Amino acid sequence: MPMKPPFTLCLAAAAAAVAITFTGCRKPAESAPSGGTSAPGTPSAGRVFTIGMSQCNLGEPWRGQMNADVKAAAERHPNLKVVFKDAQNDTLKQRAHVEEFVSARVDLIIISPKEAAPLTEPVAQAMAAGIPVIVLDRRLLGDQYTCFIGADNRKIGKAAGQWIRETLGGRGKVVELKGLMTSTPGQDRHQGFREGIAGSEIEVIFEADMKWLEPDARKEMESALSRFSQIDLVYAHNDPGAHGAYLAAKSAGREKAIKFVGIDALPQEGVAYVSQGILHATFQYPTGGAEAIETALRILQGEKVEKEITLGSRLFTAENVAQGGRALE
Ligand code: FRU
Image (cartoon, rainbow, N blue to C red; front, side, top):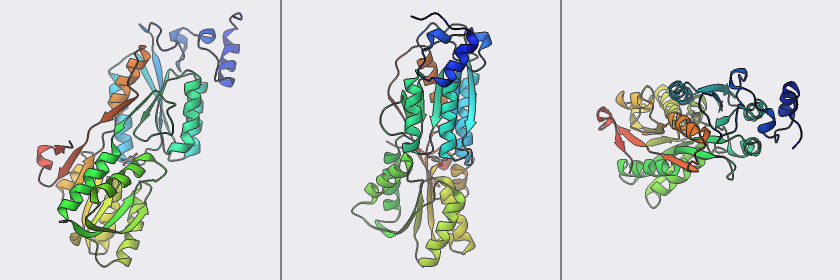
C-alpha cells in the first residue's frame, strides 16, 4: 500500500482517475461539500452523503414533479444533500453531468436517462469507480447499475390497449403518438398497446414519434387530421402528447368526435384533463422520486437492495376520477 498522498494532490488525482480507491482520498465530512467522505458500507453516523441527481430535462411537468419528490424525500433526512443537474433534453450534456458527478466523487448517483444506449457507458464508469447508481423511470442497456426503479410500462401500455378496445367496442381507427423510441418507456408503451389490441378490429391508421413533447404531438396530429376524415381515438404515450393532439383537433373543430388517452396522471395535469373532459383516460406513471431517496439511504447505509423496484399504476376515467381512480391489477 503506497503512502497517503497530500489532500490537494488527492483531489486532482480523483478528478483524473475514476478508478482511484476511496481509502486514499477520504476527507472529513465537514470539509467535503460534494461528498466522497466514505465508501458505502462504512459506518455512516453523523456524516452527510451527497447524491448527484441527473435529470434528462425539466420541460415536462412530470419531471419537475420527480425532482420535487426527490427533494421533499431528501429533506426528511438531514444527512442527505442532493445536487441537481438538468440536461435540458441533450444526451451529450447528460453524459457530461454523470462524468462530473464521478469526478466530484459524489456518494451516489440517481439518473433518469434521456435514452438508453448513450447513457449506458458513463453509468457503467461510475459503477466501476465505486459509485452506486439508481436508474429511475427510463432504462439503460445491460445491468451495470445498482437498482432500477420504475413502473411497468409494458403493463401500462397493455392496459391502455385493453381499455381502448373495450371503449371502442373492438373496432375503430386509432392514432398512436409515441414517446421517444430510443427511450425504453416509448418502446414498452408501444409494444404493450399492440398486445392489448391484438386480434381486435382496431386499426392504427397513423403513428409517429412525438418524442414525449406536446408541440411535436400537436404537429403530428395536424398531419393525421389532414389525412384522415375519421379518427376515433388518439393513444398518446404521455399526457402532454394527448393534450397536444387534443389542441390540434380543437383547432380543426374535431375534438368532440375523438377520444384522447394519455399516460402520467399527474393531479394537476392528466387527472385534471380527465375531470375537465379533455382526456377520456390517463394511466398513472409514478415518478419514483421518494422511492429513489429511500433506496439511496439503504444503499448508503451498506444494505443490499433489490435490483428492480416496480411501482404500481392507476387508471383514471370520468367514472372513477372523483374516487381517485382504480389500481391496475
Ligand atoms: C417526461 C416524460 C413523461 C413520461 C416519461 C417517460 O419527460 O415524457 O411524460 O411518462 O417521461 O420516461
